[in-house]
Every structure is written in structure tokens, then in C-alpha cells.
Amino acid sequence: MPSRDGQECPSYGSIIMRKRWIICCGLTMICLAGCSRQAPTGYDPDRAKLVLIKALDAWKAGQLPSLTTQSPPIRFQDDDLAAGYELIDYRIVELSLPILPFKNINLELELRDPNGKTRRKFTVYQVGLEPTLTVQRSDN
Image (cartoon, rainbow, N blue to C red; front, side, top):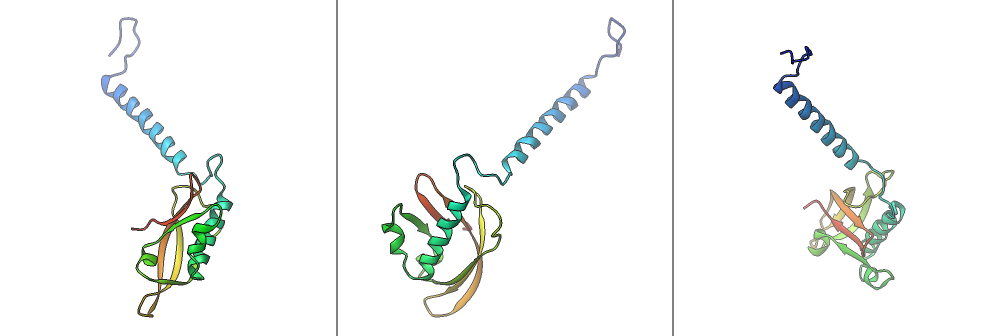
């Protein structure tokens, strides 16, 4: 529909579609920015990997109490550990990926239950460095 000055006016529907397109593009950019695998400022992915390995090695060696007495202490939480399972071995599935806060780390565990039966299990952990060192299962 032409305006008073003779130029074509955009229809109400096209204005709505343009606004939706802009909102959609903006939300997509926000989502993509949140999915990056870069460490936030001040977070050390190499230290996080060492904390994870130290905690799992302590479980494997049956020396979990040593985690709480070291400085700084490591808080370790795992449902299989709480159920009495022993860790025989473990493998970090994606060893080359950085360990980031609030991101799952895939592991394969070889466990022995309290009855002596062994089994392999894929699971995920998360590692926190602040305010305390924390390793916890996050697949539940």
C-alpha cells in the first residue's frame, strides 16, 4: 500500500516477521556463544584435569581419606563409591578436550561391587576449582 509520499509501506505482517527474524538470530548467537569450549578467565583446565586424576587415583588406590587432608583438600562424591564399589581402573574418554566448569567429562570406569563382581560403566563427572576443589558424578 503506497504512503502519502508515494513510497511503498511495509505491511504489518512483514514487520512482525522481520522482528521475529532478528530475535531468532540473536538467540542463536547467544546459544552458540554459550556452547564454546573455552575456559572462562581465571579457570585452569589443566589443573582441573589434575584434580580429577588425583581424585580417581586415590579411589583406585583405596586412599580417599588422603584427599581431605591434603592442602587444598579435594571433595570427591560418587554414588558407586558410596555403595561400596572399588575402582579397579578408569579412562577419560575425551582426553584431549579441556575440562571446563559445569561441563561433563565422560569416563569409563571398571568397578568391583561389594560381592566381588566386576563391571565396566560409562559415566560423567564435573570438576570445580572454586571455592573448593570438587569432583562429583553428574550422571544421576
